[in-house]
Length: 145
Image (cartoon, rainbow, N blue to C red; front, side):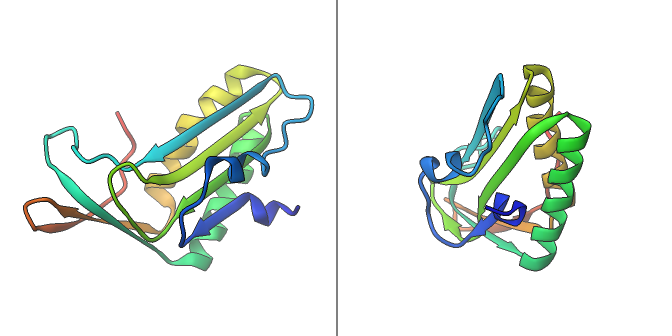
């Protein structure tokens, strides 16, 4: 498997187990997973019926691979994988899976949050929320505070 296979944008649903075989865990003491699932009710109480994801795919893959390389170097990771759907999702659907492996837990834990914040700010991925009330809105990526 090449490093290019470690970052995937998919237009179809997938199972968590598919991501797990991509991550090199040999000799690692820390393996962490983050799965993003579409929620129906946002923090402000807004109800969302559907998400539509889009991407400038070649640029997104390039950008995400650069983030992957930075994370591996800065957090002393053995590996990092990402599968992200770029299609339509509904509440409860699996949107993305991020996995990291490292000899020690500290870098792996820090890497998960860092990668998610960087992905939201830098990757050319776009999300449109379709609200239960019938409105639609595009959402810009912002790191969580």
